[in-house]
Image 1 (cartoon, one colour):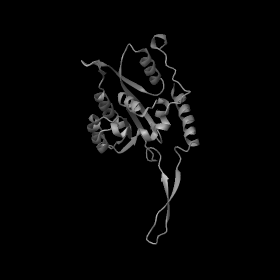
Image 2 (cartoon, rainbow, N blue to C red; image 1 turned 90 degrees about the horizontal axis):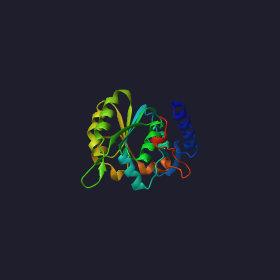
Image 3 (spheres, rainbow, N blue to C red; image 1 turned 120 degrees about the vertical axis):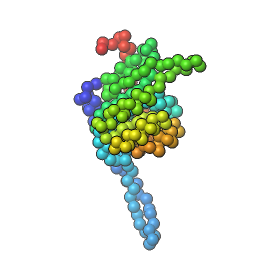
Image 4 (cartoon, rainbow, N blue to C red; image 1 turned 30 degrees about the vertical axis):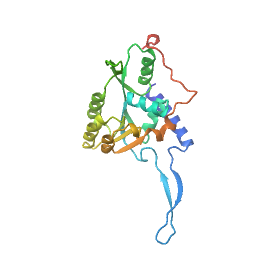
Length: 228
């Protein structure tokens, strides 16, 4: 998908959000008593990221962390919707997706190809198998380095991860005047990370907006059958 295609997709999704009253201000009336016992106030429900102009944003997604968050919430994520959601009231600089890869897994390779062609920069590292049979690829260093190197070019960093190992990098960004937002599940997010972030969004609260529709599907194709 080229830039024009992405903007068209994003505009179409914004229209859906407006129709569902997701992004617009919603007013719920509550009664608050002052000293005389009478006062009514209107509370305005804010948008996901506080209803402010977030400037230019850079998105850093820990693929493994997001995958486990989805499993915990029984959530199948629509990554096109996710990108639109994370760029609310903002201009996208880059959206990075960090993941371990199994080069023999055709389905995964097809998924990553789709991601590359639909607005994401994929940063991949081969999975390492441990003695207990588990496989893992740690990309914390790559995430931290990219966040720091690109800091002069964005206003807001969106970190989709709950990994406390990234707290030091997030704190360092704050000293460069960067706003940092963390998106994850609260139960999977380190307190040390929340303590240094400017804004935290629990994925459970936006679940309905990034849920993959039952009738939609990604057009994944094995790389062996694709013309690059």
